[in-house]
Length: 381
Image (cartoon, rainbow, N blue to C red; front, side):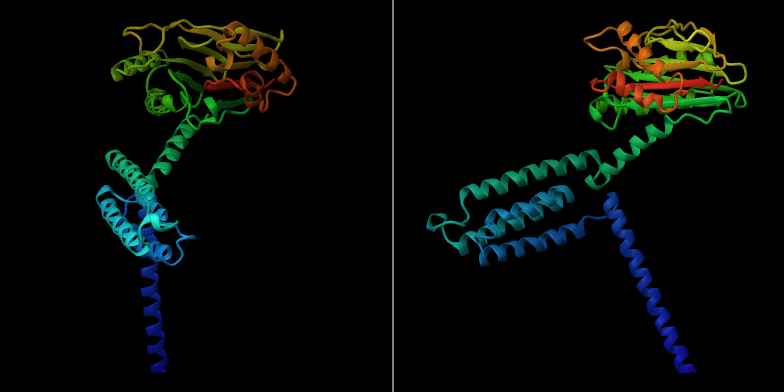
């Protein structure tokens, strides 16, 4: 019995030790691919590949050419820090010297170390060093760079999510960046205020498009999300205008439209900062009406005033907010674009506009090289 207990205890200790080792290896691997760990493991692995490639070249030069040394050099440019990268380059240079001596002069036949081989390896090393220095200057390893971009995109998407509405209301939004990119200069921030009785939505179009405007859109969406609901509705656009002016960007203007909707009565106010007008479908007449508020662009001058436009959504009515990329191009003016949009939107009157936002972008401005956003609010009949 005692012997069995000692054996069980010994086995348990080994299992615990193996479990700790496995967790440590897993943590180090996660830290490495997140960019938080050391690159010594990668350096050791790449240093081992250099003699392996050298041996393969000496044994079968027709199958493993001397220029194969660019493989660890390219990988080192992506994985290593500049200081460690120089050590890898020294090993690759020594390998070239060994190959040149053992294979003989390049004039003796093919599969030798030629001047061209040396130039190719040196050029790849130079580019790898430039990439490593750029990563070191930015402070974001390549393993973390893709994750960071994904996080930024997801933050914009989460911040643009519309809050759930009470029964009797339908809302949907579609956003399509320019050129099929992942980042857009158009974004939405929304909140339920006044104990949930009021819906506030701000649709913003930052100057520029795609990746060029994505970083500014991320910054502004966070700032606008903090302002929305913290200030009275009429104070939001003046505060947003002051925030843009303080950034002092070279291309720092933006357009925005601010909707303040009473979910009990259907009454609303629209405040605009140089944004295209909203469109309201009156269920009784079946006609679309433009709701245009007055106000200058955000970030142009201080002390700007924004005058609201008021309206009301009766049962069955639809309110549509959009950015200029949806209705305006170099080949057509905004009036023609609005007519085309309303014509396509009439097809969804009988279906209740379910899923209409994305289809309207596809039908009206599918191939436009600009950011496009469309927001629909419908009061059920």
